[in-house]
Image (tube, rainbow, N blue to C red; front, side):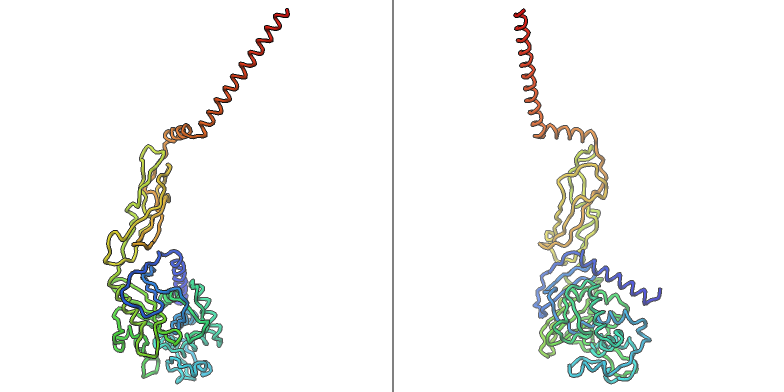
Length: 441
C-alpha cells in the first residue's frame, strides 16, 4: 500500500472515530470561566478525551468565513496524489471572481501563466489565507468546475457527521447559504489534523514559495512570535483565522502543553475594521485557563466496586459486588472538593442466582456537581452458583405466602364441605328409601 492510500485509510478511520465519539462520548461540562467572552460562539474541547469543557452557542449556525479553507484543504489533499510534484497553472479566469471583493490574496495574481506546486498552494491558502489559492485548488480538483469541488466539500462534511454545515464556495466569502457551527468545525478540524502536513502547514508563521523572495506571513498572531504581540501564546499551535463583516472575527487554534491538548473555536467576535481581535483574546485566555486549571482525573476504576447487591438462592454468599466495566477519565478542575464528584448507581436491590462473572446487572453514572459526565455498565465481580434446595424452599414459602394459594385452599375447603354435605344428603335419602321399602313388605 502506497503512503497516499495509507493516509486515506487512516483518515477514514479517524472519521469513524469522530462520528462514533460524537455519539457515545461523555456529556459536556461547562465549567465556570471568570473572564468575559467577546465571541458570540465558543467551543473548548479536550482533544485527548473529546470532552467539551466550555460551550457558548456551540450549535448555533454561523458564517465561518475563511475557516472554510480547512475543508478545502481536506478535499484538495485527498484528491491530489502528489502535492510536492503536482503543478497547477495559474489562470486569470479562475481568479476573476475575486476581483473587487477585497479578498485576502497570496500573490497568485502576479503568477498568471506560471505553474505552481500544490504544496505551495496549500501554504498560500492556509498561512496567509489566500482566497486565490483556494479557488485555484478547487478549479484544479474539480477539473474546471468549482461547483463540483464544493459538492465534494459538502459530501465530506456529511461523512464526518456534520449536521449543520453547508458550503457554497471554497474560500468563505460571505453567502447566506454558507454556514457551519462550532461543533461541526471541531469535527472537521479534528479530521484535518490527522492528515499529513496539515498541522505543520497551519502552524507555520513564515513561508517562502518556490522562487519568491518575499514570504507568506500567517494571519494567526497567536503562533507568530515576531509579529504576534500580546496575542502570541507559546503553547498555541495553528490552525486558522477567518474574518468577514458578517462572520466577525473567527479563529480555530489548539493549545498543547504538559501532555494535554485543547482545541478552541471562537466565532462572531466583533469586527469593525479595527486592529483588535476578540477571537484571539478569548482563545488565548481560554487555552491558558484550561492548560493551567484543568486536569484529567480517573473517576471510575474497574478494580473498585461501584455498589453491592443482594443475591437470592445461594448458599455461598448473600451479596455480590458490582464493578464498572471500564475506567472513566474526566476533565475536572484541579482545585475541586471531593464531594463535587459523585457516583450514582442504578442497580436492583437483589439478583437471583446463578450469576456469572461479567454479567451486566446495573449501571453507574459519574457526576460533577449537577453535571452527568458518563454512565457505564456495572458487572458482577464473581460467579455465584444456585442452590436447588434453597430455591425449592423459597418456592414452597412463596406458595404458602401467596394469596392465590390461600384462595385455592379456601375454594378446596368449600368444595370439600359441599361434597361432604352432598354425600351425606344422598346417604340419608337412600336410607329413607330402604326403610320405606321394608315397611311395605
